Image: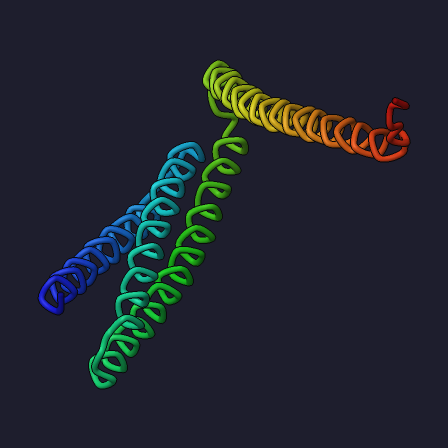
Length: 186
């Protein structure tokens, strides 16, 4: 059992390091990103996924640490978990700074293009693409909300049916208890 725990711990550590490096590479990509905003959004989506995977692995390592038999091994693993958490927080800070820098650069680039009176046709095309993307995002959000509402209605209907069923059963029991038992006369 201890050997399988050691293997699991090593795999968790390797994956944590892998995800950490992938996050750092994506943060560097964000620093290097010169636009458009949709490219930055795509990079941010990837970073969020990697952070989620990283967080999950750190939680697994923490759980493995708590399951250790030897107190010294447990403490050593918990210290590793803390170090990984600190590194993740540092990466999150770097990510925010890179995002801010990139957004400022994109804004400045767009301002410069506007001041230079950039190609009107290209601006219209970009605006149409942006409107289409925004429209798609809103539609997806509305569909998600609709699905959630539908699920909520279905759960409410099921709860209502359950309440009606148990209410009827209770009424039947009460009515049987209220009817006096008449013994036949012989």
